[in-house]
Length: 339
Image 1 (cartoon, rainbow, N blue to C red):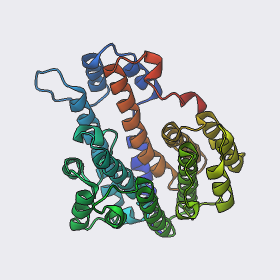
Image 2: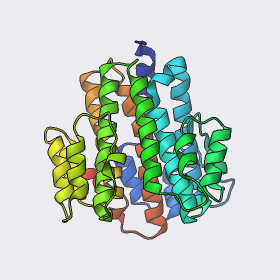
Image 3: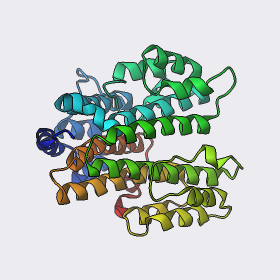
């Protein structure tokens, strides 16, 4: 098992530069986009608008670039050990591919497809922009395959001439990611292995809520993700089959009674998008607790990496809340009080 002492020390140091809750709150209170940009620059982001007023798209690109630089630095610190942390780097790629394929299938703009994505070593910003410009899921799968990306297979398998089954595509990507992350984590410590199991459990939670939202009968055995420890096939099937309001989330929450995820799952009811974002914040809070209790494990590294994504999601929500004129209290994540 590799030693992580050097990476832990560096990750702890760089984590102090992630935006604090009070900084995010100040950004959420910005009166307009220029005021947001000024506060963001004060907080260490280099805007570089060259004398002109930056647009929301400019600012999103700045946020993505900073996230990419941080993950690139983490990967460089890890060196060959980065392969053990597939749950960090490949999870970002999986989420990016899902978003890009869904955007292509729905015909959304390239700018909309890039919203909230975190560039990585395998999919840097330029690669994400190239994928976002493609017209079809099939073209995305072909380009990923040409780049020999390890997650290209599931995209190619469902991206035929007709509209792809996006839920099955996302399930295929999740399954391959889970297999790779689990296999890689065997070379890490117990915190990393436990974290991977938690990620898989929470993936099943979001999928089950999505299926209950749809209310459409589907072969749930094809969509269940093995490798977790709390959400069993029986619990998953029962939640997917729930037909009334909060029943699905109550069934799923029962598997997390002694965890910080219980309140988050119950609070989000049948809203898979809101639940997914809330679970990112809950996972980050859980990892920060683990880092305090077990400072010489991979917990500080995992907490730092997830903190990068959480910062991107938070800034995106605040920026577009300001752009669309949302009330200040709605610009920060609505579930922040649950964590």
